[in-house]
Amino acid sequence: MSKYYVNKFLFTVDRDPELLKRYAEDPKNFVATWEQSIGPKLLGNDVEASSVHAFTAAERKALVDHDYVALFEMGAHFFLNLTLFIGIYDEPYLKEKGPLSFQREFAAKLQHWRGKDYPSVET
Amino acid sequence: MAKLVATLASTHHPFYLKATTMPPEQQMPEAPVWKQKVEAYRETLAEAKPDILVMVGSDHFHQIFLDNCPQFLIGKAERYDATFYNEEREFGIPKYVLEGDEDMSRFMHQHLMDQNFDFAFSNELKIDHSIICPIITVRPQNDLPVVPIYTNIFAPPLHTPKRFYDLGRAIRKAIDDYPSDKRIAAIGTGHLSLELGGPRQFMETGPDPVFDRNAIEWLRNGDIEAILENVTHESMTQSGNATQGFLNFILMLGVAGPEGADYVDNLDLFHTMEAYFTWYPKEAAA
Image 1 (spheres, rainbow over the protein chains, first blue to last red):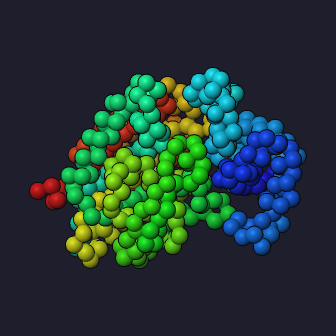
Image 2: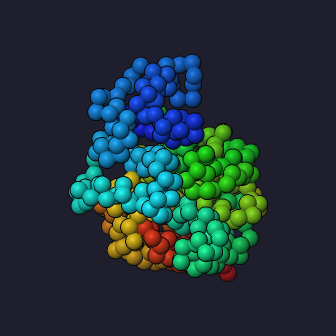
Image 3: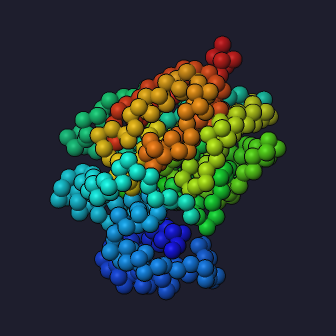
């Protein structure tokens, strides 16, 4: 399991409009591309590779499925997990169901965590 | 020596600008009163006539990430660009360029190191909404140089509440010792109870209204003892998964010193309690 690598995915995609678009439109192929050519790069350095981290099958599936509930439960950082999926879903939800409807649905799907200790985001 | 003329501590709600500048018929019902409160708060800074702003915030994984994550960091640059693409996208916050004050940054960095705070530094720091939100709210003309300080409130393990308070005390000492005739205001932002990306996000109130009311009273009274008795990482987490933003309020109380605030206001908004505090140093007010 690599919470760090999941967070690295969320971080690198959230900050780049082109990557975000690709992840929104074709998550399966984009996650594969990310694992091949984006994830292994040391951040801020196109030359140097890092060989330390890899996704588990469950992490890969959660990312491919845009499954923010599974990502929360794996301990992905709450801010990155929220902001990336707001970037993908806020606008279509806004048009269809009104302001904050995506954010409220996100919360509703996590209600089983109310009153419990959330999975740690410590990496 | 430089003079601290005001200490401001407030929440930073990234939607303030968008919420108060969209066409009135589309605005949320609270927008006019929110704007009034922010503009009244802005006056508390203007009255102090500052020359330089020492600004305390926390990067939200915009420039800083888990590959290299400092607990405390000071910016040392002649200018700072601000607002990242994903903040424009999500919050509608425009780009800014803030003037820096390298001389004061350099002095503060050394002084804080000499006080045993091992600060990281950055000569190329892009500022995020934790510092731009207070520019928008309390200094929208963006006409003053800044010394930015970032704290880690986000990527555990985090320093203790006591350490944040002590850092505030150390920042105050560094400001007081700065060999300059400049008037300094210290401005820091954070949160009261807050949940992001969890089951209690975007409710009608913040996730823990009881904590919010207590926190406002503690800060109003400058009651650091009550804060240190009641606020732990465990208690903050129970109040909402992003409540550790309150650590920056504790830091700012350290800058002000354990004194009652001169200005206190708050606003119960959807999903957060907004709060605005200003302290004037007692010798400066005389």
